[in-house]
Amino acid sequence: MKYTMPRNAYVPEDAEKVVYDEVKAEIYRYDTAKGPAAAMFGGKRSKPDKLYYYRSLEAREKAISDYLDGLKASAEFKASLKAKRNSFKHTLKVGDLLRCSWGYDQTNVDFYQVTDLIGKTMVEIRPVAGNYEETGFMSGTTTASKGHFIGDPMKKRVGEGNAVRIASYASAYPYDGKPTYESHYA
Image (cartoon, rainbow, N blue to C red; front, side, top):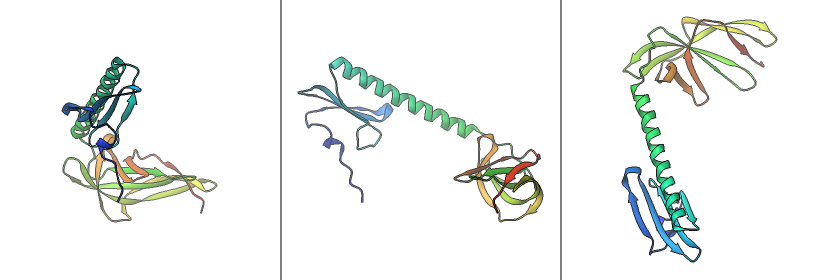
């Protein structure tokens, strides 16, 4: 089990604690021999985001104000992303083809076909075969073979741009039917 120090380990006992519920932050103000100081904690973090000494009280208050403004801007940005994500509606239909291109030092191409719509945000897809045509040394183009399934169905969430996350390293996007470059080493 990982040990984390409690918040009070970073500040003296006589520090003035102020809680800012609107941005979920706690700020401790205190004075030291070096000058005014502050410890600023966001969310439930036990380690301070900022722990500094300041040249003057005005500098400390400005730093606190800037910190709170940053937390507020971050919360607004996250809320706007969440609203955008929740309002997104995909336009995929049963029978649509998706193309996934991925790889390192070679380009692999996989195709998927939408076989079912699940609610407003998910689809069921199945891998389909590709028709490969060699056009160069260990490289060529490939096109999807609609309806020629080669794998089991998968349920996936649809993201912006009708993107479907296949793996941590690859996403599938709507396929336009054009031949896609592919390369290999074996």
